Length: 98
Image (cartoon, rainbow, N blue to C red; front, top):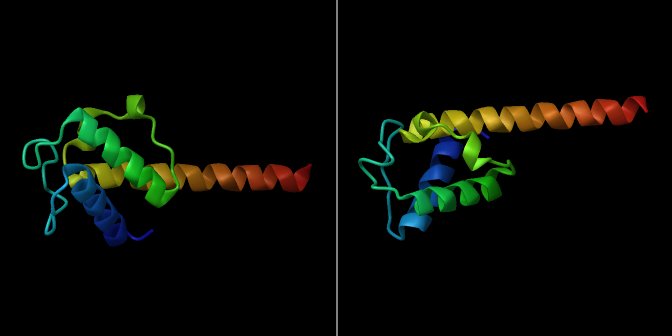
């Protein structure tokens, strides 16, 4: 998933959980200060992003800095996608050697 596509996916998730359009966000948009996200909205956003990207996010593994801005959350999701891809490759290699 390209970075811009990921940012748009997060933006869509935010619109869904906030129940209002949130277009024109930048990577510097502060999720809590500018968008006034609640903890419940964060969980909804996580679930929506998980569904859209196929990753699994452990909310307890998130640091507040990962949620400070749209860009920092996109960084977190990109890292989770890479980790998931590496995990799948390792499983595929193990299955091929068995």
